[in-house]
View 1 (tube, helix red, strand yellow):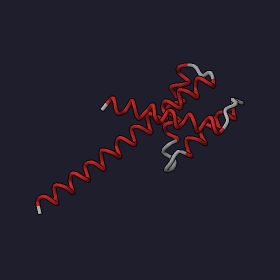
View 2 (cartoon, helix red, strand yellow):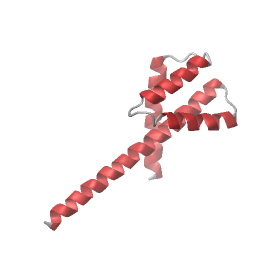
View 3 (tube, helix red, strand yellow):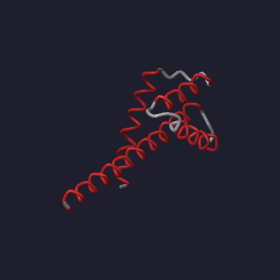
Length: 107
């Protein structure tokens, strides 16, 4: 019976670890996206810092990526920055891959 308990704990630990890595990766992706968006919008260093916090916070509104997409889309539209939905989603994917690499190298 001890073997089953150990396997169960190992599975739970792996699940928790994977969940933590996913969270860190998504937060890093959001930071990278916000930096990219801030540069397109011509924000100053202080404005960019605040904007990064806004984008990261926007991801906590609902599960998935749509809340971040809506935040960036709305901000681009408000500033008349021409970025297509396709470009935005492609960049989200690229920044996720970049974030995953960074998080894995930090671990």
